[in-house]
Image (cartoon, rainbow, N blue to C red; front, side, top):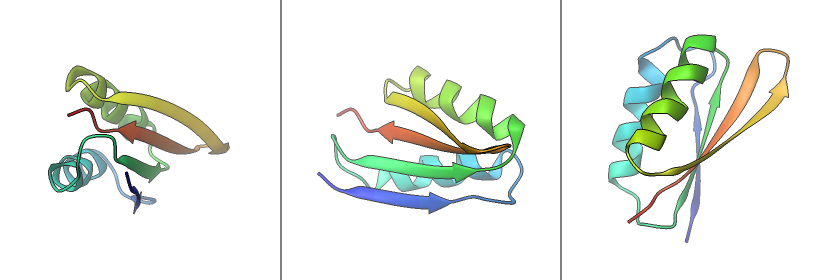
Length: 75
């Protein structure tokens, strides 16, 4: 199990979502992807997509308007 950080600060939707999708394709089940975002649209769309894809998702607000989306890849 590994943990990978993806910094998408300053990037608007759909860029964080596309980057997260591509990164998850290279990861194994049980791996964790930490996506750092500061765009409210991505804050809504990224977790929604990940849950629909069957992954486990947690969201942590780091600062006002900055979030860390934790995606655990499910096999």
